[in-house]
Image 1 (cartoon, helix red, strand yellow):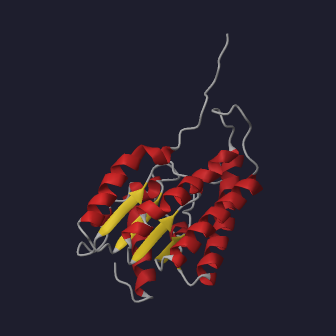
Image 2 (cartoon, rainbow, N blue to C red):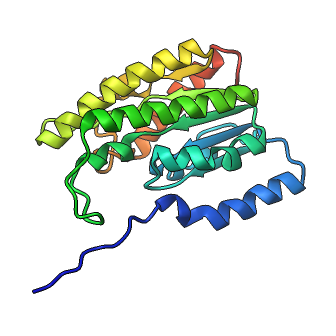
Image 3 (cartoon, rainbow, N blue to C red):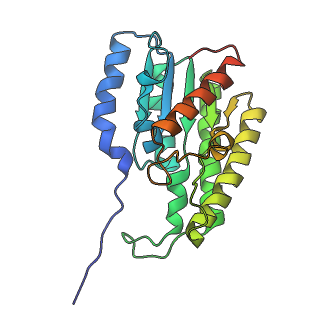
Length: 224
């Protein structure tokens, strides 16, 4: 039986491109003052921000499920910088990690761990530099932990990735004068289940993350 396989990888960042273009234009044309942009992947997209933060702030969600840092870098100017927020909260990187798995679209084996880590850190560094050049304050967020990291070799590698990337993110935030938000250790202390599937937070996970973000920003004199 002949199976031709898949011919291309779909960039999931394209899924909301038209929606976000329309919303961005509306914000710009109406000359709205944006307080916060939350920028990231599905963990950000699924976050009901108005249920967690001050509704007097204009908070914009620009998360896209499945987004990877190479595409996030390309859309950062459109979905964050041009909106000129007081602060941009970024949480990225976990989808890149899963490129360690075989790629059925390209009919190839998974990528090397070290290559993935280098690409993620390079892309996030470029995002940080572009924010700095545009005088946009960043809150750089840690990856959140997978509570089931011992179940198989891939998830054990993911825990290593989480720890190593978080360390780099913290160093980058310090080097460029930005804020580091440590969701990882706050969630790691939680004994109750805080995700729905090992990756995406449930209501408890989001409430903990909201508390950590509020407290971290407040230390910098920023109220959200």
